[in-house]
Image (cartoon, rainbow, N blue to C red; front, side, top):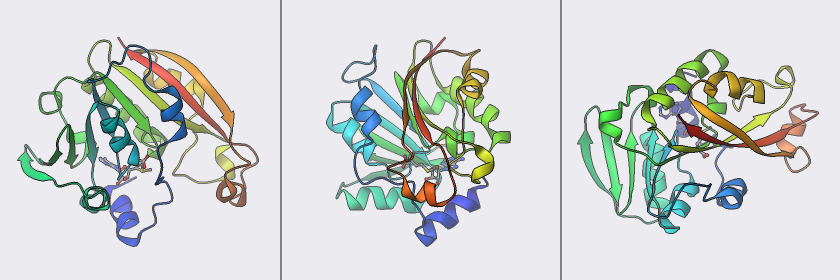
Length: 218
Ligand SMILES: C[S@@+](CC[C@H](N)C(=O)[O-])C[C@H]1O[C@@H](n2cnc3c(N)ncnc32)[C@H](O)[C@@H]1O
């Protein structure tokens, strides 16, 4: 998707992807093995995800990146968090205690600006990418990770012709194709979530699985 697609979503409030509670799969699987309290967690395409605050409250340091300034403003104001802002390369960094959010394009981020990361939390980031952009997304993420960076990846798997994304379906074989060269991959959960997702059922989906993976960057 082009940045304008997302700017338009935020400007018009069409943000059905946003959850006002902590993501149940994050709560269930965190901390993933090898991630200790105090670890630095990178959250690509973070939106105004409540999960960032939850991770912070659990004692982790969190760095998000998000292209929409509106989303970042909403995150800080809705949680009544005072933020310091400063330029960081071509990004603006919003900072509050152990949390910082970079405003700008994920594909422009380089490792020297991001620094070391112990873990990556991807919920609704990979599956926000159309097929053609996914290899670039995976390569960029691999370039931002360190050896042994852990990654929690949450995807959706459905019959793509039944609905146009985002969110897109990203099945297990594609996760393997995208990350298999740079990561070890373990599928830790695969749950049928069609029943509780009326909106997707109404869009015509006949099956929907939410899948959780543990990745370790090599
Ligand atoms: C589907 S939403 C998911 C947000 C968040 N992960 C969540 O769970 O609520 C995707 C987000 O990625 C942002 N985004 C899309 N392309 C981006 C890019 N190239 N760089 C940074 N953010 C981007 C969008 O503005 C949007 O907030």
